[in-house]
Amino acid sequence: MIGVVLAAGEGTRMRPLTRTRPKVLLPVADRRLIDFSIEALVGVGVERLVVVTEYRAEEVERYVEDRWGGEVELSFVRQGEPLGTAHAVYVAWREVDPDEPVLVTNGDLVFDPALVERTVEEHEGIASMALVEVDDPSEFGVVRLEDGYVRELVEKPDPGEAPSNLANAGVYVLEPEFGRYLEEVRLSPRGEFELTDALLAAAREEGVKGVPQDVYWLDVGRPWDLLDANEWALRNVMGRPEVEGVVEEGVELRGPVWVAEGAVLRPGTVVEGPAYIGPGCELGPNCYVRPATTLVGNVRVGQAVEIKNSIVMEGTNVSHLSYVGDSVIGAECNLGAGTVIANLRHDERNVRVVVKGELEDTGRRKFGAVLGDGVKTGINTSILPGRKLGPYAATAPGAVVRKNVPEGKMLVDDVLVDWDGRG
Image 1 (cartoon, rainbow, N blue to C red):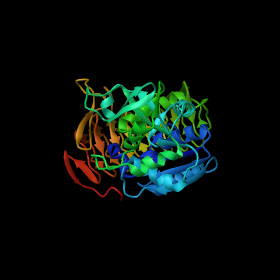
Image 2 (image 1 turned 120 degrees about the horizontal axis):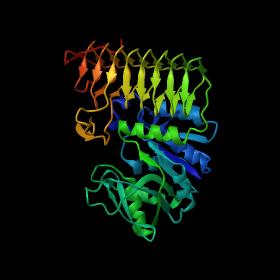
Image 3 (image 1 turned 60 degrees about the horizontal axis):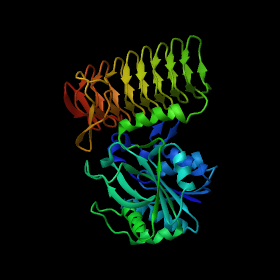
Image 4 (image 1 turned 60 degrees about the vertical axis):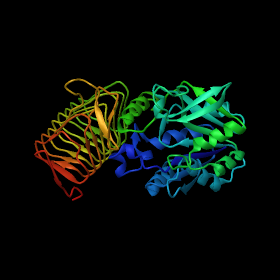
């Protein structure tokens, strides 16, 4: 069986995180998003894997080669102009010219690998697709089944008009003959060549098997989804907790905590699991890391810092007397002493965040901030819930961040000024 992972997209809803990294390389626990798909494909016997890349392609290719090159035969193909999912699969199809089934997954999903296993086991006919039940079908492609076969497939139906609550899970088994549907698909109203259009054409002419499943699955589309994915991964896919770094006397580890090689935990540090402390991290003395936190690597957490339910990426420094709650912090940031990232509104309503110019409800009563790479906060900065700071943005000492701070700007007395944050 041949595997195809779609990893070309930019992930604009994930900004500012994806301004400086590919979406599929965003961290979740001790891995990256793309690892969930590749691991599942390898687990069902895929021996040849094609990864479709484009946005920051070299970074994706380098990571996948380093991580998976010894376990599966790899090849990469660039999508070029982003013309849609059918186009992405088509460029991979031309690469492999398949004479055996092709297992396709999106590269930005977090899911139980049983999703792939069952889809492969129940595959029949020219194509099969994994389906999952969702609470809000308007966010997804939605399928109506009859006798186990796809009869209707609607992309992001209006609220109340969905034909079911079965969402397309982004996992497909396609026979070689499916290639003609990829060749015949036409531009959709969104101006893209949609894989779902090819599947619907195949469903009408030959039949496409739908495989509904009741397993964990998350389409990681927005920054707060990373926190959900991170907590699930820490609780379900990490294996037995291991302590490979240095844990000095006076450190307390509660519950499942993974401490990677090269990490150092100093006296008075308390870590409540599930939590992952990556290689080269330095914690303490006297800091507190609460459950569902991932410190990716080379993160410095100072005296009297508290971090809760957050992802902090490589090389970031969280200085003493700071608090980070329910947040996603990019790489190489420096949070000045006394920085507080608030995660709860006074009225206790759900936190809302601007995504692609629209204010969206996170569905979370508690959510902090999203910081791009290289952000610097002055001492005693306070950041209100749901705010974003773009890459290399900054705040002056004592700033209160009531609005988003764009890339390369500094907030001074509630005014945005130009800031050469790259130094």
